Length: 98
Image (cartoon, rainbow, N blue to C red):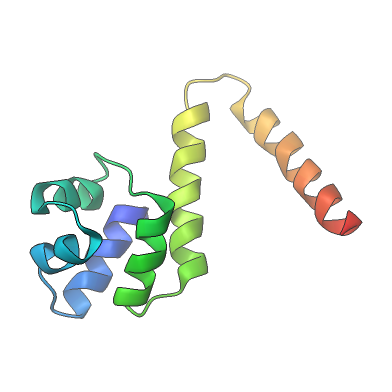
């Protein structure tokens, strides 16, 4: 599942309209619609606010949001999987240092 799909699912489960969430995020409804369709990226602050508004797990939404950004960055690279593996190892190493 991608970020936009999850937001739409949560919004519909709460019976909220796109325009309601758009107003709270201080964006127009067409912009919010594009976020749900995956045509536009939300800002990190918007993701956090959406989690609060939709009573959703902020870590889940941030994970989906960040994963999409990473995918967009590496999708056309032939060595993407190798680069992601190296990055994962670096993250683990740095987490163990702390």
